[in-house]
Image (cartoon, rainbow, N blue to C red; front, side, top):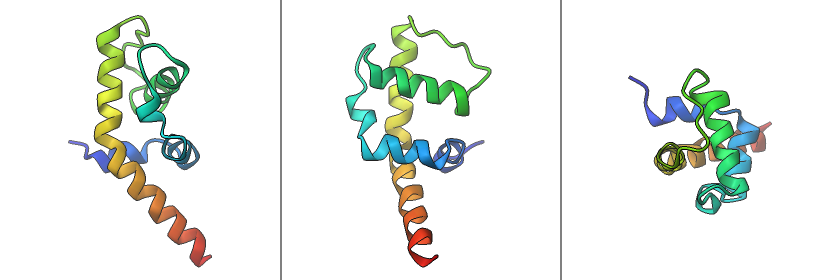
Amino acid sequence: MSTYRDIAELIPSHIRKEIITRDLIRAALGMNEYMKYLFEVWYLYVDPHGPKQWDCGICRSNIKENFLQLEAELINLEKESNLLNAIN
């Protein structure tokens, strides 16, 4: 079973940074461009074989909820990356 950290690590660091710095999780609503971005990230990196159904409101809602659950780990990974970059 995957942890939130395992799932967050599937998303490339530059995309995690984009999601956090632009607060895309909160900005994602309905069918807006931010929701589309999270939707695409989810199906590119986390669940590439899942049923990609943009028109499904429940599917979009589930992805938003998943990102809300992942947010703390996305932030932790970004902090760790910043610390490593500061050391190097």
